[in-house]
Length: 433
Image (cartoon, rainbow, N blue to C red; front, side):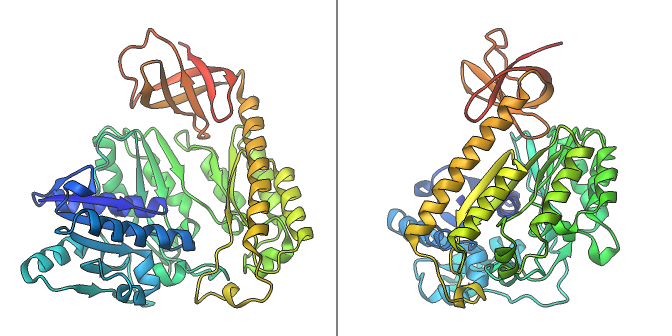
């Protein structure tokens, strides 16, 4: 039987999709490229924003129309955070959450046998352990996501994730080492450590995130280790110094900001001030001169005034991020922010998002211009056309080369590239000895 996966949301969801795929393939199922050809369709949902909900639900309804006989599964954060959604999406034969991902294949086979709709959303408990799920093989990839942490204890006032993912829990260090060995043996050069709240890694074991990074770097064949999104208030000076001596560590720091206005940060229940954030950014740049600092910015949070937004805009300029991801505040039922007075109109949110994105485009161009003249190791990933090869530098700057003499694929290879010019979203260079 053929199975098709549709994945929305974060890198953790991508990892879990790879794991579910591996589970199906190991039992004789065949992966397919389109939902129309599938016997089984699995939609792995995201619920961070209302648009994420809409995309997941639209996909289920669309695929039911296109493929009436398929078994359709809705899984992921949306049904976990909002179990009542199962009653509204009758097009899904199976609805399950983020817990017990390892049972999805079992639920499908149970449905194939009984042909009875199955709602299987298991609530989280405080004593839950990190779920051990099959390793996804990430075939034909140059980098692999490795989920080492799940859950969140922070309860930001706008966010449903603690309800969708439960409390913080970590993958044991020995299990990380075992999985990294398999990844390295498969020929993958770069590992990206991901989690829902990555800086909480190892808290229950008396460990820190840097312990996991060091464990990965010890494995033969691992050339790069990169980190997913980080909470700024939990990064210590000792963490940065330990990371700085690891040759495999990629100095790209995605520090989730959300707002550069202290009043808004407090309303969001974020646990740092703009001054503390800026101090951390400066410390990172002093220890990692060639680093890139990227972030997420939310606009239109309830009661965010024009002055608050301008303050956030100015702070983003002050930090001088390499890249920013801008999104508009989306009320999530069940969160404190959704009940606040002073909700911002769609028009104002849209206008603020446009202005912040324009600033982000400018900051990205500035970052790319600063790279000209540097020589950087590039891990090549794919050829987008017969004319060029592309890959990423350690700080995740996108690099392209247009050299015609490299007719063979450079995928999974690392070459030193001298950056000669910059474009709107990448740098262009030449391979050197």
